[in-house]
Image (cartoon, rainbow, N blue to C red; front, side, top):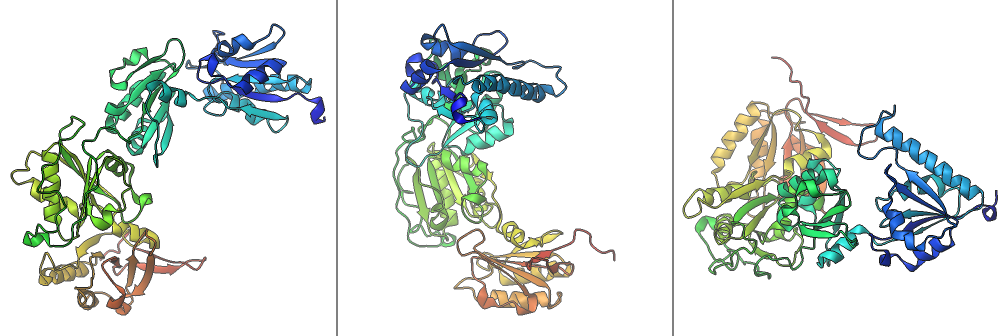
Length: 532
């Protein structure tokens, strides 16, 4: 059958509810159509038809596509999904009969036809068989933002659109990381959505919009809405964070040197002698120590991303702080890597003044990182009453292990080779004990420009208990642009190839290196240990 002998299918977006928000093209298509199709529940009322009603003609053929089930149960042998699939197939067949007869069919859709709309089920079944055009419409998200009178997204922000039918844990994680968000399909899901907003720390910012642009429109702070009053045609909105109240904004200059172990204040984050403004949110101040993982945003957990976005002040080593996107209104306090104690006290001082502070740390903050420094200070006066939380991150050891297989598949020990905070004799004793116990080793802080002999000495100690061909993984800048991962024999470990950005994973007597069929080498330690 030629294209000229068939009718044309239109998916017509009607906008959010106010008939005056229909596009000129939507009105033109409805006026020229032979058949007007629209979905409805079994009660027969159709919001889509009511929006377009003034443009319908007496001679229009109307196809009412009545859902067999909405929120109630069904005795269909395929359950809800089976009942709906059967309905869509039948509805598509009814429209195809009109199209085969040469009639033009306009399927009405609230909002935009391809944005959570029922029309898309017809489109997927018919668009490859008949000439089709989709007429876009104003979405409920755009209408809600307009009725709230607040920017939805600005600059580099990302808008996240979520269905309220997602599991609560998934909603919580996504809301925690979102710059701005809209949650659709409330109704019965409202209690779950509200809990997710509260758990993600976003409830105070959330707005509620019901029937945007319609006569029964309602807007309110979401926290004040009665769950029993929420219809399906409503949504939750987290507006743009840009220009949201955070207190005084601005960028703070970087520090320039010093060592916290000697109480050097010269390299403390700037502003530490100036009273910080109180937090603008009305919440009590707190310090959250956030693990960034070993590299870029792919290694950042949703919880960590959310805490960074919510903070009023960011405190950290310059290199790590530079990995956090700049957000308008946030203060950034960067300093050298050697002032952990001063940095911790500075963050706690900000929190005492009511600020919500995120202290950033590479990897996991509790593994040779900033969590200990913050907690040590927080256990002393005058900081004992300041709330402190730790948000975990991917560790360097686990990231490097994943790159080569599973070398940490059995018992292992984590040891820092840095003798800045403990004597080398202690390190040597622990290396001997761990190797004698046949533990896999993850060696942090193996070397730097000022520490050049520790790796060689550690290799000598390890060879007292380990075979020369024991596999050693050298992981450098894991996840970063300079990532390099190598597997060498313990006897061939070259200290010159190890720096502060490298982590070493030293196998046990059971750790194996295997070349697979694709030519890649993997390292793994069996979970089963041989009996004595």
